[in-house]
Image 1 (cartoon, rainbow, N blue to C red):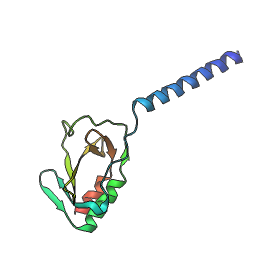
Image 2: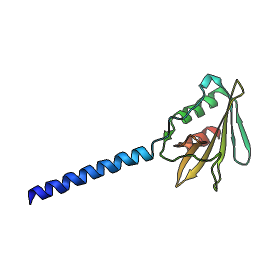
Image 3: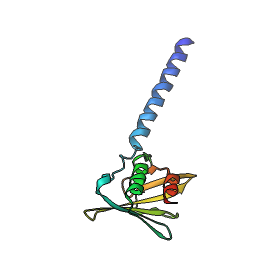
Image 4: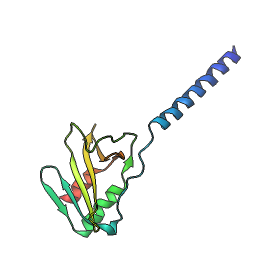
Amino acid sequence: MRKKLTVVICTLVVMILIALITFVKLFPLADDLRLPTLDKVYYISITLDDLILIEDEIEVRRIMNVLNTCKPTRTISMNEHPVGIEYYVLNLKTESEIIYQFYIYEDNQKWKLESPYEGVYNIDFDLIIEILN
């Protein structure tokens, strides 16, 4: 009886481990968010209905600090922009005229930052709203 129980428990443990490994391989975390270095950012713009332009160095630094704390999720970004939801567009423009574009939206009462074709990240957007006010 004990031998059968041991075999059943070992089999269950192995099956759970295989399921976890499969899940991690099929749904990997997004890579770290690719951002320009702070000294290269010329300005930040945020758009929903109105354009908010941020050129003040201190505010740019504060927003970049929030962006650097984004946590990757296992959600895949498969479009140029989010579909079927209202979103903010966040642009980082560098001195060399490169524009990094991200989308910020609320999903299940959590703020998400989406980098097209790269990944979706959890973000503390309330901090950015606080900076803007």
